[in-house]
Image (cartoon, rainbow, N blue to C red; front, side, top):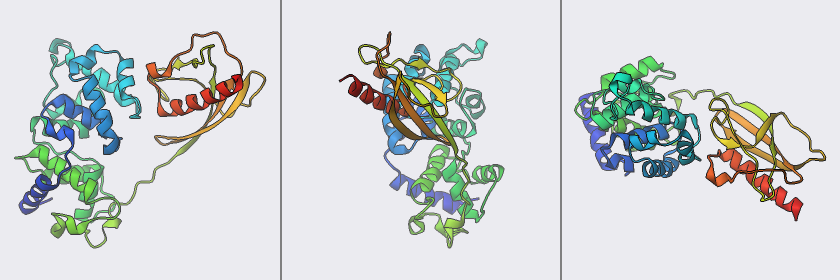
Length: 329
């Protein structure tokens, strides 16, 4: 665990060097919750844009609960991992329910356990929101904190239980929200996976792994699955693509896009080959062959800008539109 001198040094460093992120300038629990859910699997530079869009579109939990899941997916467009948006919408509706129906009377709960009961909220998010938004003395653990802990204790592969125990023991209970953010900030800007800036670290003197920080922790082995699909894209007389809304569960759940077929399908009299789109999606390496209908079909088509589409679908539709226009000219 970190001692009192480490705690004091890290908080002084954080007060002087923290990045000026907008969710750190508010005490609104809803805005803080939005930032934590967005940043789970989104880089901060991109998260800034999407967070501002979500806050502008849904400034309160009630405003999201009143909206459709399609509207939430549209506002989330581009941020990826769309299951987060669907669960966030479900969360907002549960919060708005009366307590007699398992809700929270329209107010985000303030405790770790109550937050943990909401859709899409795991141990990290519950601890982060409880400490940052409500000042609850709970320690959170993310990838940055795990890396700081592994280097501080010179452990190559600390288990989640061991990391959490270290975080709990190191928690500065007078400023729990700032403390959790300080540890995460240290991991994000100083104690990074590569090019570690030990000379700038406020707690370097107690770090057991300082001489060889790149050894801690061992990188996780990520398995990537290769997926080959064919997108079948038809257009109406106005050049609008015919789209379907996918089921809520499964690949790109709830989003709009063309029909996908497994494997590579060849062109024929009805369809022309428009090209191939390669896209990394979570742990899937996507290769999508795009076939475009040679002639317009009875619509109506869908204007893509009016519905929620994934970045992959946008690439596919742009390629298909170009091929369709070229064929008609």
